Length: 132
Length: 275
Image 1 (cartoon, rainbow over the protein chains, first blue to last red):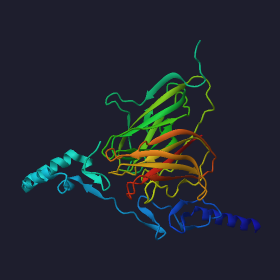
Image 2: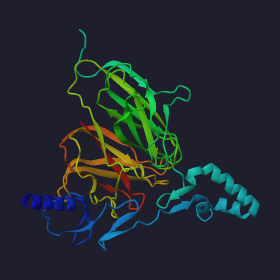
Image 3: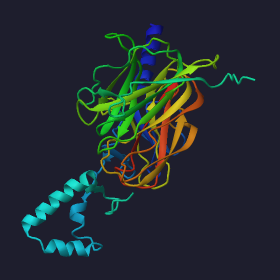
Image 4: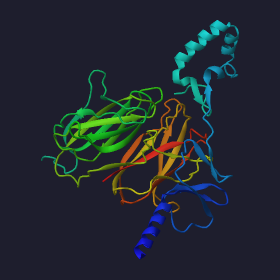
């Protein structure tokens, strides 16, 4: 019976260790560490939240205000072909565009889209100019 | 007076798997999305005893790859190392991942490779292996490579989030709760998370050992970067770095990034331990 009790306690501890925790600063909410193995004594000022499995950080992000994970905002891609039509750095192109009819605009768009390939879309933090 | 150093190779090298027509490596086709394909032979029989080898992998198509190196005759190949990572640029054929392993391969070994890819099924990669012959007796040979942090569900690694404050180290992410074997040589592997359009930025990454809230930095401030043209986090592999990490250790990593874009600041990290 003593051995059964010890075995049960061991299994309990082992099961607890398989949980996944996010440790955060209790004052700011800033995450400090995430994982399934942690120290026994928490440092002062550190709290935690426990989950059944690790978060997918590509889809979720830690929110300091709510002390929980929230959906990561979707990546915003900017279409350079649309951007060049309104960017004040390209007035000549916009003048040219204004002089085209719908058919010619579509032809030009198709050609530029093929030319640019992947470079047609940029990250929101990037620049309109395709840089080397 | 002859120069017979105990260090160094025997000045005998050979590359296995090269394909002259096209100047590339042997074509290895992945299975279904995120599923390993069949083994592809790189060399039927290695010509000499190699003290170490280098494997080079390049994706012909865009995406994140995980690939295995196998030894043995068909159909009894055994994975010698599983889930080596490679990220390829989203527009197609890009840089080559280079893994150098200080691990001997006996003469007469059949070497194979298989792969999986996150961006779809039947994606092709090119593989070559460079063998180096030993000269004299080298330091005790290492014999095993273990990949920690591979995520086979998306052919990626462990995600690191540097958080919403630029240039500030954020939370540790766990690479592995407990290393299976000791680590004598360590590699840091970076993944691109299949990001189709990155922003110019830099990261500084800490590699640490220890339980959550008691992580001890082993390798501080590993510098990696990417640009909006190449859309790849580079370098993809750093190492080997001599370390001495016992089996049963928790590995973790954290990073700082020069930008705060919620997607582009992310980077994948894995660790390879050789013992």
